[in-house]
Length: 137
Image 1 (cartoon, one colour):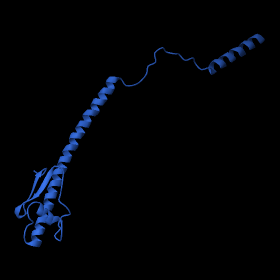
Image 2: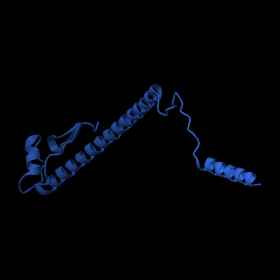
Image 3: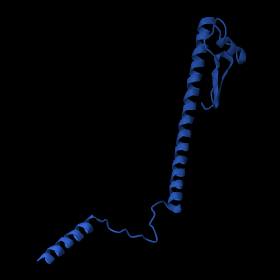
Image 4: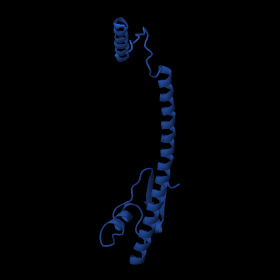
């Protein structure tokens, strides 16, 4: 009977040790590494290039519309200043640079400075004619 008891205790210790041990890890010769292939990266780069091209063309269209709006606003401001000059003095400002000088300097200063924009030019003509070339047309 003692022999059976020892065998049972030894068997219990063996089972207890086996349950506490971690399973042996298998070492594979080839690890499967995760990552992107060259083709996948090239596809992503091409997609980003196409999207950035679309954005550039969309923004340039918006900028062109902004230049047109700025030109029209500047032209209207100069027309109002020319009419105010006429109301105050009874004559229109002279054409060309002398007219700009009359509108921007001195007692009759109706404009802070001559409007200058990207892609357009505003000119003063005879008899208060205000013309714009470039983005306004």
